[in-house]
Length: 383
Image (tube, rainbow, N blue to C red):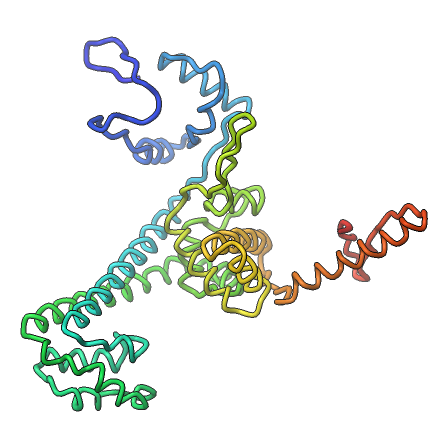
């Protein structure tokens, strides 16, 4: 519904808004104000009531109907970070934005060198490492001799001096205009690096009371300290907000959506969730895929059959479930099941099916029950 001053309510078609329509107001201002005044506020997703029958067309009746839906449990509250973690989230998100902008400037510098027929990135792994940065500084200073520039190589790069000389043969095309642009790009990269270090120090202070949770997250394969900080800033440390790990994975857009209308099923896709948390999970999933762990084996198995994109989503789903379990159990650490976990599980199931089939062919009806562990752990459900 939309209202004009002095006019009655005018109905607007539901669905996509007009291109020239004013933007909808943000929920954060009223929510935070009411929360600060001591009210218990609930943020609800409109998709939960989109297909519910009986929705009124007038605003007062619609408000009463939404309240009734919430009272009978048809509408559940969405996750909203606490005021403390909102401040932490602002810092971690800005650090990630600065890191992405610095990466773009590094790519611009590489393309600028390639436009002058200089292919340093084909010889040295890190263009902005010690060797690459020293060569670029001398290029800006006016040095154009490939042999002199190649002798600036440090440590392991000194074994590639002949290759460096060939990569620097295009220095004659590196003009003063190129040098001016490269100097500007490197200055932006240095400023971004200094800002990132400053913000990282502030984040360390803000997350100091949650050092135990950060260490729990870094115990997972593929998770570094910065990844753990970014993830905890988005999810918080209170896992009671999510009933199960599957709820956390769904909120983090690492679960397939059920798109079904009647008997027609749509294409399974993951929803658009928190892009900052998705960025962290994408990095940790790829990093875990290079390890000899259960998560690494899962990533490689899925990447061969379904592609790397789906493997990232699936491993991110597993990582969020593990994170939920770790944070729900103070003091616990990640215990890997081994890279041969899936082979062992498949072998066990295969042997069980084989022996049960043999006994069934002999006329026996078999009921399986796993023997409990000696430490008193209840038996798991038979495969």
